[in-house]
Picture 1 (cartoon, one colour):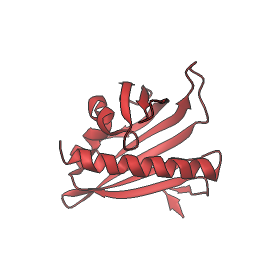
Picture 2: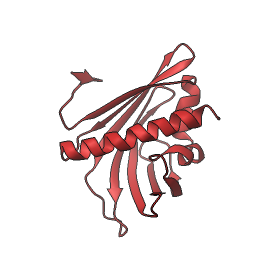
Picture 3: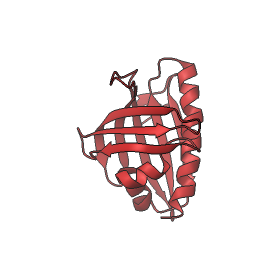
Picture 4: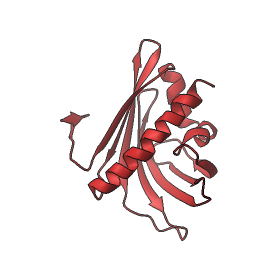
Length: 153
């Protein structure tokens, strides 16, 4: 099994979803910092701080707050941006003191399917299957939130 020429392992996560919006709009909602802040995170979470430098080598950081009031920080660097087809970036949880946890690589592809978009998210390589499954739950909720948001744009 492969995605973009890479061999999938049990510590890879691949999610695919058909989004009811044109590819250009879906891509913009993934690359406009103010739009991303409205949907990135599981349902019930809010973005309380964010910064995105959308270009290869540009960094991003987000702080999202859980419904219980706990802040979760994530950071990464954009490696590749091919509008409106693909985004590739690193992802790591950040501690309040700035230390980063295990880094993964996320590739999101956007494929036009009539007036809709097939979005595929591939995140690799997790430290464990348990971490992969935790992210599956989070990303599944996040993509549901994104699908609800994109029809309002």
